[in-house]
Length: 245
Ligand code: 1GP
Image (cartoon, rainbow, N blue to C red; front, side, top):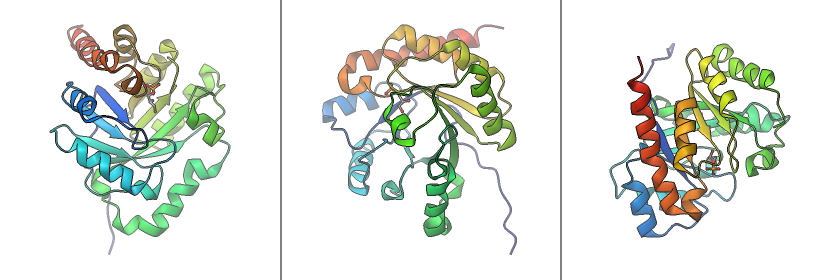
């Protein structure tokens, strides 16, 4: 029987601020509670290494004490835990290795494709722009792109492949906001996630003005009050933008 693609409402469509938590990094109950009650729009669970079924289940069940949405960034079938509100499947556009672009994804689908909850799965095209980041080392991403090359990758994901989420990944360092804005302005349908080095309210505001969604990671683990302060900064920046006619 022919199976047709049905469009589903996207679970990430309203996200403006997201905390990314790594199942392989410990976080105390009290810190997790403050993260979950911070007013952020969602928690994204994922990491570049050390993600297992057990540590993913454990983190998900702790987050589930709270009401906010929780999605999974699925980099390894080992971390494919049922029960998340949505699943994002990363593909690194600027890696020279096909395994990180489509290879591992195709292998995983060969094994688990018939089990995938497709109505809550979305592709996530990564452009890795900080060569020092763990994800850059792992995938040997060619992070030293010119703005024109970055825009070309963004067009490829957004217009040619129609991937619903484009992720500019500067993990560990604050990126070039003029470039982020330029990429966003050229998108036809994808939602733009920005992640990397957001540690202050000012950076959070700038990132919120440049991208659709701001992802905050590391600072949760090394300066929780600073991490929490990024939430109102993003939300207020969004409100200000909404009032510009
Ligand atoms: C990591 O993009 C996220 O994948 C967030 O980056 O850890 O630098 O905040 P930081």
